[in-house]
Image (tube, rainbow, N blue to C red; front, side, top):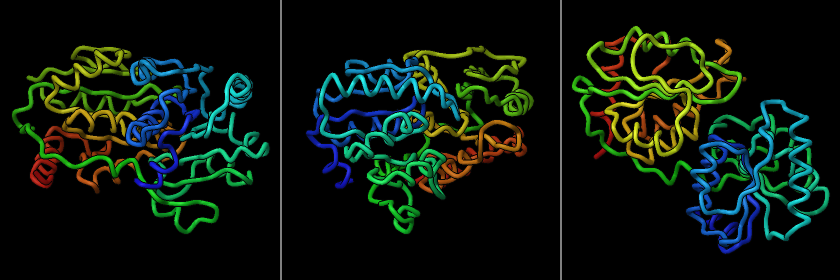
Length: 317
């Protein structure tokens, strides 16, 4: 990731990202590229951001939902205020909508802001990326090969290059503790996944749920709406198998922790997200040997075990 190192190393950077996968990616890139210690972050206030950015300089802005144009305008005012208070060598964002609060007017002012498209966008840019294509002066980087052929984009690095496969230490037929984490992006829910797992997980195992924005309640197990960073990590450490939605930030956190992961992508047809990008990124993680993918209609007790057996034997040591 030499290009990223050259871009960020020793620079005073204003990092701008939504919470979730966007923040997780940008934080991991920053950790590998060593920007100046007086760099600053702009993001939303959440358990993830407070945990991940502990000890760093952070400005919290109002949460921006998908297509949240009013909140984008409000965040833009806060970012302008920050840039009046102090100077930065570089402004970098991984999106999503929060990049629209900063990058268009920064580009028009000649500041050359950097936009790194989310690694979850395997086949092309997001809506934010497409909108920023229309703004001259934004430096745009993709994390997949489409960036090499699409006008105005570069493809020089991917955050996934910082991960290596590892062999599972658990046999699924012997797993006794499952942790299920479903994500907090509002208003999208994963009721179909809760119902499928409630039917299919063995009756003699411990199950811990983090339901996030999902309102469907399972019939058994320990249920949490949301866990803070420390409690989340404890559940990951104790679990034999983690079953997760395919949000890139969650998957990165789980893989960093060495968890045995089954990723279940959100699907737009079930109103679980705005599109099917989670399916694309889940299969990219699986292609690299980092996890296994299972779709909701395929979830049965036998299939859960078979998929885990498959990934156990196929992962390199």
